[in-house]
Image (cartoon, one colour):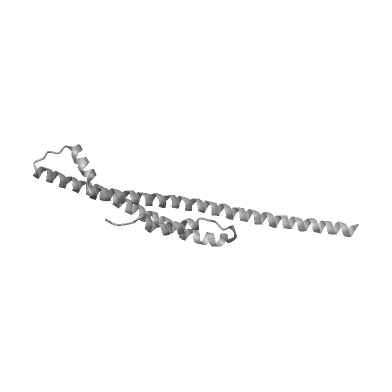
Length: 162
């Protein structure tokens, strides 16, 4: 069975979580880096999805194989087995338990990757908002500065006339 464990993801998750913060003083750098970060998260999610789907398939395949083995063994021993008994025996099998545990782990990782992807999508909209606010504030400050200069110029001209 392939291994893709939560612990191996932890360092990636921590790095990505720290990148979610938006430093308003470095919006240019934040904007430049966001696409690369977002792509990294999207690729990690794709990998997690692939592992999870593989884990689901392994559970199904292993269940079928173990079920066939149990049926064969029981028939060789001359024992009849109902479908419910077979399901119970399959559920108690160590290989099945291991496959299900792996499926749960990959599901957890996939959930975390989906949450990170959503967070980075939200980050994108927050970056857009910050940029728009910066543009608006810059325009407003420039406008106020021009208005102040015009008012000052008018006042100086009045003072000269008087």
